[in-house]
Amino acid sequence: MPPALSLIIGLAVLTLGAELLVRGASALALRLGLTPLVVGLTVVAFGTSAPELVVSLQAAQRGSAEIAVGNVVGSNLCNLALILGICALIRPLTTNRAVIWREVPILIGATLVTTAVLANGYISAMEGMGLATGLFIYTAVTIRQARQDPDQNLGTDVPAAMGLPLAITFTLLGLVGLLYGSDLFVAGAVELARLWGWSEAMIGLTIVAIGTSLPELAISVVAVKKGENDVAIGNVVGSSLFNLLGILGAAAIAAGGIVVTLQPFDLGMLVVITLALWPLVQTGHRIDRREGGALLFAYLAYAAWLFTARYA
Image (cartoon, rainbow, N blue to C red; front, side, top):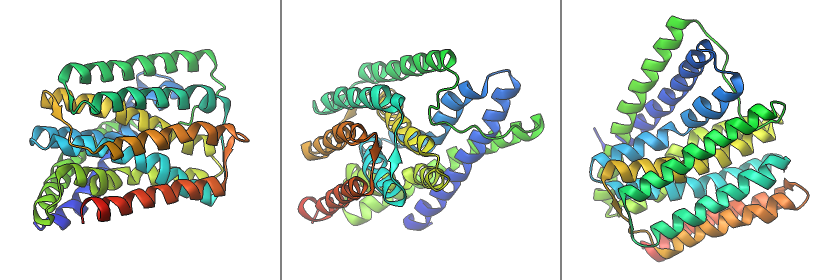
């Protein structure tokens, strides 16, 4: 199969698999007695990041762990600059207190810690376990706080319930779709890198990152058009945090350690964009169209730099 076709089909199967898994697993969790709030903060939150997770694990198992690192950094740049920028251009994004005083500061802290680890040029399996533990603690604390304040909107949207046989079918089909789709997607990405003379890190930063971020883009754009700003922002911030702690941690564990070949400018760009969120959400508690345009321009400028100054 041509690598471009493998990439496209793999992405389509990945996206469908993630959707089926979220719907099926959410229904199963609800039938097991979990509250919609807990389901939204766990099954839905993790399920929407499933494409990035399985692609990164697949890459690590294939000996192409640099794709996983590039995917994490590139996906977060897509989330925070490309997706938030597009959403703010569609409609200014108002932010609630939880995003301003808890979610964004936690994301900034996780970004600084992760980039410090990556800047050393190597992330060990032990460091990966530390990142994954951080995600577990964050999730547990978030669930506890949500139960104490059930009226707070944390930016999650739980699919409707369904019958048990259908829920099991959806879950199994979703898992199969994720595994098969990720295999096709990574195989296509690795072959394209070889044919085009790109590094695996470059493929991870661009094609893989944009491809696996498409579900977040679709969810956020639909939410903004419905006026559900909290869902859009919560989806982007939550996904970015999961990428840094969960996906990078899991990839490092699976690969037994990863040699990092990203340039300092890649990591610096991630830090700058993440830090920029703080003043953006502080000014008027919203991200307006002008600020959204600035985020989008920053992403496009970075992409242009990747393809010209660095890899021309």
